[in-house]
Image (cartoon, rainbow, N blue to C red; front, side, top):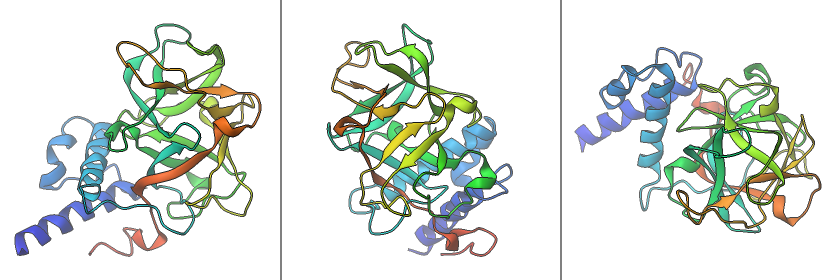
Length: 253
């Protein structure tokens, strides 16, 4: 038990360093040491995936409860109309931009469905701060480090606007920025919200079209010009950061 507790403390410290301002130097523990040799971006992603795997084992998963979604949190987003989670992977579109594809998947336990909440720039979204309705954010795909992105290319199945994952290690361009559309003061975990793209005024949507090989059964994600029941999303599984998790103040269980 003592060994397990020490290992758990080490993993938690790794996670807290990774989300803090010293992320460049963090995660040098045994659990994450191998990742450090493959570059800083890969190190952060591997450490975060390790933490998520530990938290989301059967009986240990952290389900969203009452409260606001906060900056720095890592979560899955469920399209409430089609019951699929926002997903990406190292599969590129064969048409349009040729960038990394973004899809919807039915599986709730897919590690490629985690996204990190970030601000338009890091100074506008301090970790642990509740995300306001109308706030500009970026959604960074944890496993590949690319940002949720859209642009004036047609989507491959529905001919709506293509949604892709773009950038490198969380750095992309101005077409990665979305506003959270909700009715209250903050984005609450139990509420369905919309994501409106600042650059092109479309809403992140799914209308049910399914891909064939090599991503058979996954749904097309695209941008639509008007708000409707296809573009509501809800926060699901994840790690929700609180101000008390600031590594400068708390580094122990």
